[in-house]
Image 1 (cartoon, one colour):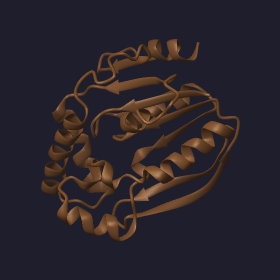
Image 2 (tube, helix red, strand yellow):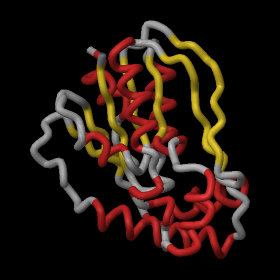
Image 3 (tube, helix red, strand yellow):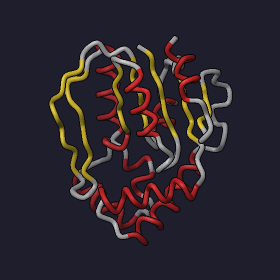
Image 4 (spheres, helix red, strand yellow):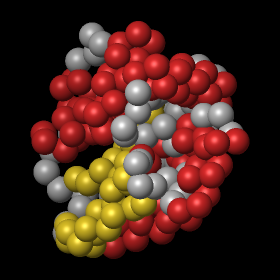
Length: 198
């Protein structure tokens, strides 16, 4: 099974790129780290004490993510999809069987971290580089609409998340990986997809 990791700061277009790849190539599935945050009291209380909680590894349910990732990678099928509700801090499980999966995309702010835990280093890594103000505009719109935030809070949260992402990952932290591609605004995605799927 082909493995593709897509990383970048909040609002850089990871989900959009994932969807582009899925539309052009059949038999793929996306696991978004955004749907694997911790739930319940942990995710309700800790954000009050830890600045940028949802941008830090402590908020990520790595155990559940790894369980789903391993199952899909081993069996080539997915039985359910998970959706994280940021307002209620819950995960909704939707039964939706997908068979004959030939490639798996892992996208999200924790994708790079998760890729480093794998013994199998035979994967493709797409790192999105986008201007800070473009990311901020997208994130603020999303957070107001989908996460119930006020504009000022969304802006402050974005600036914190940007700092946390780039503190965690210095530029070119995967420089020895020959299967790494930097995706910028003018990158020819179709050209990269040809390399990946031919």
